[in-house]
Image (tube, rainbow, N blue to C red; front, side, top):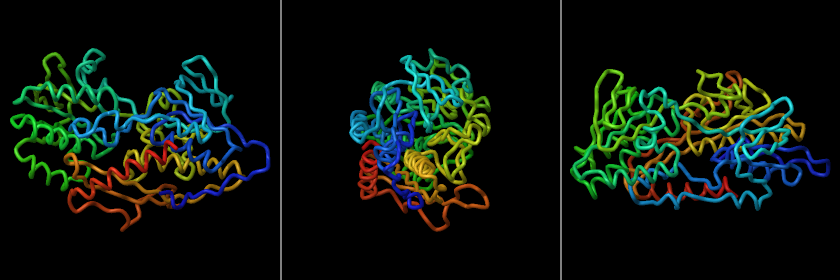
Length: 408
């Protein structure tokens, strides 16, 4: 949905209007590249630079831990974008020269651009957990970027003793996908219930309470998973002993597990940091929500999880998809010599409590001119009354639709 940003096509018949470089091929960047070509056609040259040859979806990746999906089910190529006319480079942007509008790539190539969209995702603040060094990262998974770590964590769960303990930590918000950690608890519990019924889960949450869908998650934890989950709020983990498989909270509590899953604190991706875009708490990029332009470096559009969120706006795949459309629309309008359109965007987040039952939270956000931001629309959106198999079917349909939307 981008009801308030259904942009008009680019005017034809004139000279090519320029080159747009999109950095990052996730939910935000891939969507931006696709919609620039949909709306701009042959008059806009669009290049997408993504370090990974294939896209792996973070939404639904917790199901790999539960065992009902494989990572291959969530992995897709970029051929659809190439077919649409986007130049897709499997490369990495090392640096940008905003003055000369040039990107330096890892391959040694240099890429010129007239407009730039940066979708760097998140990177992790490992140093905020003492002991979470490179050696520890080889054995203690975060699995907060879907891919090899997801597969490795699943293997650790399978190898865990039948009466073992799985310890998962959650950083203070904001972080990518607010309900994601609690969905992960459900997926691990679902696997344990079927295959390791004597195993237990300890959740050390750095937040004062469950961040998203509290009542719905508690219904699962106190229902089918009753007695399996030890949830502890205000339990921010600050230290890791990887060899001893022990974590320590800021209050000094030590917790030992057979498998540790530490989700570190997060900030906008490294490239955004190197470019000086992190002007909100030194972690996130503030943007003009009409255009997605950075307020630190105005010629760069920043989208997705890297942004300093507007009120009640989650860091989610669906929201990154909306950001990509908003940035693409703003660029098309600018190239046509028109003012930006007034944005209205929406978000839906599904969470699975087992292999087929899911629930959702949804919201709609509109531009508020006097506050110069996007705010949630009262009465729009909503929350599931309960997890259900029907909602699970909706969730799988949502995933198929958004993957097709961004990658074709």
